[in-house]
Image (cartoon, rainbow, N blue to C red; front, side, top):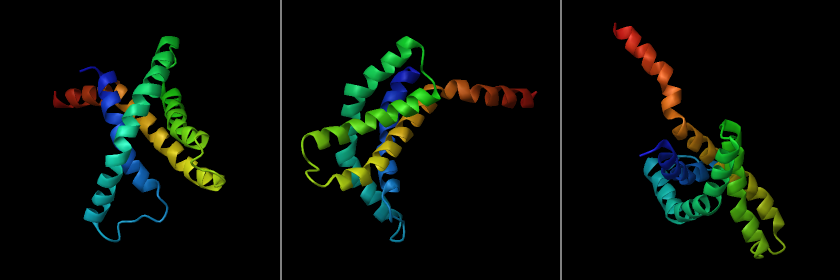
Length: 144
């Protein structure tokens, strides 16, 4: 499996964990099982949306960046922020926040953070072999 396919599969898995960590006031006072319960509940609803948005919007943006030769850390993280903003813009466009735009303003940073994390993980998986190559060379040199 290519690193691009692995990045496409693994990056959205971070969404539930990032979403739970972005909720203000959330802590693990009630324990690990409570935390995992909340993560699983959010995963049930967020992962289908995350993969749909990734396939419909994220992949075309990535292919555009790739064709232009602009695939790097910054473009993938900023692209992740852009892609994560699309669901919010759609919800606002369909009137979900009718007269309550303050809720949109309060949740937008969480979605931006989630997009940045997904973009970072995408970049990390995409470049994993390149990043770990110096470490592998150093470890092999130390065995001699």
